[in-house]
Image 1 (cartoon, protein in one colour):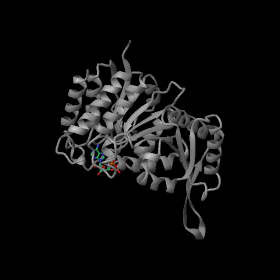
Image 2 (tube, rainbow, N blue to C red):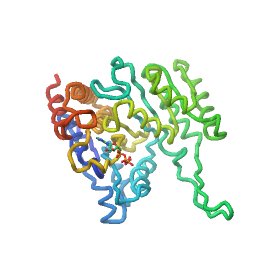
Image 3 (tube, rainbow, N blue to C red):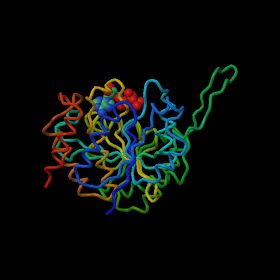
Image 4 (spheres, helix red, strand yellow):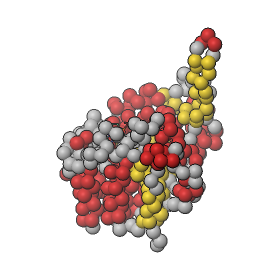
Length: 350
Ligand code: ATP
């Protein structure tokens, strides 16, 4: 089989530090990858005035997957780094399903540590292209009212339906439970449409137990009774917030992984840790690479390499259990020491 073509956007801050470990671990599995390094991000912005070149999407389309570290730097306004790179990729490639597993890794300290292995195993599916982050609105000077900011959420039936269907399919493959989170008691249009679509799609999936809940109640349930949740589907904003809460429940930003997919299209899926560029610790070699390693593991699954993915998954779990661990998990190890241990565990796999 020919090598998988993977575009690497290591990005800013701790991005290059964690991506380096993920690449080594993927290589240790023996899967053949042709890496294309794309030096896009805040340095590129300072050099050229753009976070990435004008033909970036065309360049990426020639690949099977994208591995991204993190984007953002204190010297570049957040709305530029976010809109001109991350959101430009998600929207430009129409990567409409953001998928984030939330399981407890053995030995990782956190608010839910001590629960039985396997008790917490949630899969979040977030609508990734519109909703509250559609970018529709404006700033107006509205006379007596003073300056006014208007932000409009956009929920189109096809976009809601495709992500809801995708979530039902994942629930069917897993434990057969789907929880959909909106706030349709307080908002009268978009979330009501969302709830209607969930009820309609449910009719095609009689084997899935469906629960349409209010997002505030769900946040409390994630903390109190996470074992009752299997697949959770939510809008762009709610998915964003809930998955950060899920990351904290898992043991922190350093361990959480994500995939942005366009099922049914040939756009390359994007894999990235949930954390940002962490400028407060960048350049010191102390960032936790587990979130990026886990994202690379999701990438191997998506590339059709289940054995390599399973080996990397087992290696990550073994290193979390036995150490070494980075400081955010109560250890003293460097990013590279954790990466070394994962590589050794992959190489030792039967
Ligand atoms: P962004 O806006 O890009 O999300 P941020 O600073 O708000 O940036 P993060 O970059 O995710 O958010 O950082 C949040 C906190 O989590 C910081 O204190 C950071 O040091 C910590 N953190 C983030 N990633 C890691 C990591 N891989 N290892 C250890 N700590 C991390």
